[in-house]
Amino acid sequence: MKHPVHLISPLFPQILAHPVPLRIELSNLDTFNETDDPVAHVEHFATVTRIYNAKDLHLYCVFPATLKGESLAWFHSLKEGEFKNFADLAPLFSNQFAAI
View 1 (cartoon, helix red, strand yellow):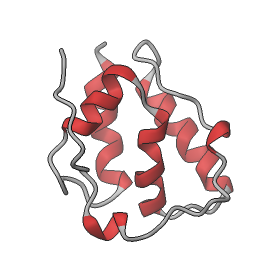
View 2 (tube, one colour):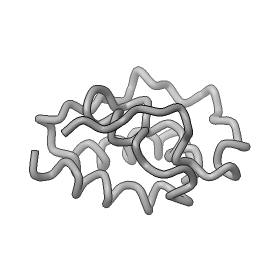
View 3 (cartoon, helix red, strand yellow):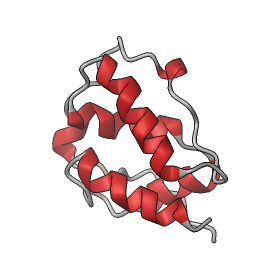
View 4 (cartoon, one colour):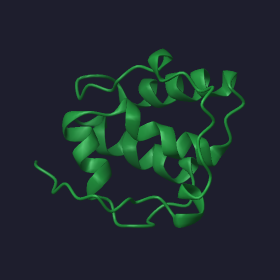
């Protein structure tokens, strides 16, 4: 299923107002492929970002950088401000891609 892509962020403005620390090395994060296990992807993401003492709001800002294709389109199809933190997003992401 194709999701419309738009440039409005589903991130709350309060989250976008906090810049992500440059010390978070994105190359250490795996990119999600729709054939991957979404729960494992979220767990790996949380494990790697925990090394950097990333706060929840940073997790939420960095997570889309680990997505591509259908999963990134899905993320951008979420309503603006739909989630307040990563803990809200993670289960929805896992449920969305668990059956693929």
